[in-house]
Every structure is written in structure tokens, then in C-alpha cells.
Amino acid sequence: MGLKIDLDLCTGCGACVAACPFCALAQRADGKVEVNEACTACGACVETCPVAALSMDVAEKKAEAGSLDAYRGLWVFAEQRGGKVQEVAFELLGEGRVLADRLGVELSAVLLGHQVGDCAATLFEHGADQVYVVDHPALEKYTAEPYAEAMSALIRKYKPEVVLAGATSMGRGFIARVAIQVDAGLTADCTELDVDVEKRLLLQTRPAFGGNIMACIICPDHRPQMATVRPKVFKHPAPVAGRTGRLIEEKLALNDPVVKVLEIVNAMQNEVNVAGAEFIVTGGRGMGGPENFKLLADLAEALGGAAVGASRAAVDAGWISSFHQVGQTGKTVRPKIYIACGVSGQIQHLVGMNSSDTIIAINKDPDAPIFGVADLGVVGDLFQVVPELIKALKR
Image (cartoon, rainbow, N blue to C red; front, side, top):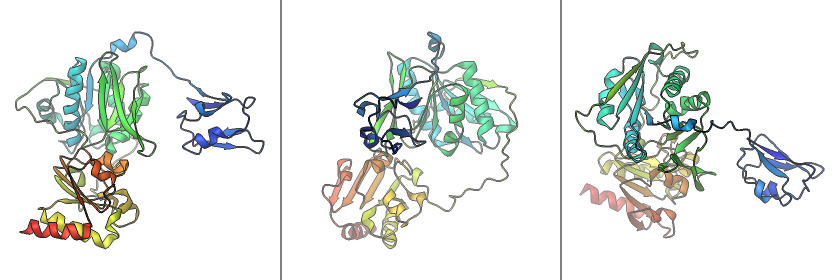
């Protein structure tokens, strides 16, 4: 798909140039419009042209009529690291169970690795009806090529209609390759999922245009429908002890990866795991400077070891490292208690924390958007409120 410009019709009015959100259109010396590599084919400019000189060139390969009916079932990629299933896999199984039941299909988990068969039991307990296991030495240490090769082979053979993966470094790293290899679409970084049961469509919601809108995306012409989903968006389902299902072991002849993993270094081993914390204290632009994050650290300690988070504004200002960032371009969190101090609450930040069980906002601006999602709002100077809160907690 690409943008086409009919230069014979173009009058050089510039309406499309002003409408382009990516600055991908510019006027030449003769006044005619040209497009550059920044174009994302979003189509925002097409309707603004008063002489219909712009159009979208759709070079799309649709599935043959009736072939979509051959695809059934909802799959979750069960991400594991070092033989331990990651939390995001359980979250997706919980939501996948709801969607699969509405579609009337089985919920399956796909487990890739080497000597990881023991992980299947916990996947069954968290809702999977089937677990596909590919055990191969090439999958022992994660690299994108063999993981994509294995997943693509399974999709071609069993034809699921929906495939979900976590929007983690691993999920983002290989699932796009899979989408290309199986001629499917992929929606990245979703924050909400739903299904249209009648049309059997996966409704995939994600932030767009810098987080200023939430776009609902569908893939009506291709299967499987694929999406990566942010960790901590969905709840971890309660496991059912002793629950079992069908284990399918696939023997695949995988190529050795071109990239060799020599060593795995945990760069965050000395950092607080914000994404996994049950209590989070977050500072925004209202903190005023890096030295004031010591106040939040004291509050976190008084809460019994809470994690310290930060808005993008605080991170961009260099006040705290990006490991602490919460929001669209940071971590998505779901703690029991989230305390936002001096955070205005722009939509980019809210996307990453509005699923918290209890949100407490402290801000001197009574019109700050953060109060729109807060369960408890304190209008006041955080440098007066937080010290008093610390004293109360210590008592």
C-alpha cells in the first residue's frame, strides 16, 4: 500500500501538506506535491484534497474466498526464559480464555525452547486446552530466526485464527517475522482486545499518533489475526491445580541460527522491577529536579519497599533512568496501589498505569487529567503532602 499523487490534477493548494501528521508531503518548486520516505500510508491526506489528486495504491493479496473458514483456534505464545514461563504468558492465557470461549474455540499455548516440556503443566493450569511444544537445541537460547521458523511451521500446519504474544523484547523480536512468513497482518503493542463474534474478527486496540488517540484495528482478509500485547494489561488468572489438557509435541528440523548468543547479561539486575511491583510511587514534571526523587524513595521505603516510577517528562529531563519510566513508551504496570506525585496525567502516561487497582494522585493543579482516573485525589503541594504521608506511615 502506498500514496499515489496525480500531478495532472494537483493544483498545489497545499491542503494535504498541512494535513499530513508525519511531514511526509512537501511542495516542489513548481507548487506540485511530492511524497517522501516518512509516509506511513495512513491516508490522512487523501480526504483533504479538494481535487481528488491523492489516492492509496492498494497492492494487497487477499485470501481466497472461503479459505478463512479453515482457520480456527486461539493461540498464545508462552514466552519462557531459562525454563521459567514469563508472567505475560499467563496474562494472555487469562484474556485468551475469555476470547476463545466467546468464539467457541480451543485455547492453545505454544512453548518453544530446549528441555522445557515441564512448563506445559502450569500452562494447562492457567487455562490452556492444548500445548504445542517444539523442543530443539536451536531454541535453547533465544534468537529470532529459529523461533520465527518454528512458529511459522506450526501456524501453516494447524491454522489458528488468532495468535497473541507479549509485547516484550522477545515477542516483538520474532513475531513480526512470523507475520511476514505466513502472509498475515500484525498489530503491535495492544492495550485492549475484544472479538466480533459474528464476523470472527479480533478487535485490537492500541495507542496511535503519539498516544493522542486509541485506534481499533481489524484484519478481515488474512489469517491468522496476530497481535502483541503489553505486559500487565490483563490480570493474571488464578491457576486451577491439577487441570490438564492435550500435549502436542512437534519434531521440526530447524536451521541453526545465524546469530550466536555468547552470553546473557541481566542489565536490570540492580534496578527495581517497576513492571512487577505491587506498590509504585511515581514522580512527574512536578518533582522539579532529580534531587527531589529522594523524597519518593523515602515514601517507597515507608510503604515497605515500593518501586519508584517516573513519567516520560522526568526521564527525558534526565532526572531518573529510563528503567523507571511508566507509560506508552515505558513500562505498563498493574500494581495494587499507584501513587502519582506531580504527574499531570497525559494519555501517554495513563495508558501505562490506568489498570492499577487503586490510583492515588497528588497534584497542585485541580484540573490535571490524572484526577480523571484517580480513586483518591489530593490537591496540594506534593512537597508538603508527601512528607506528612511518610510521617503517618512511619507511625
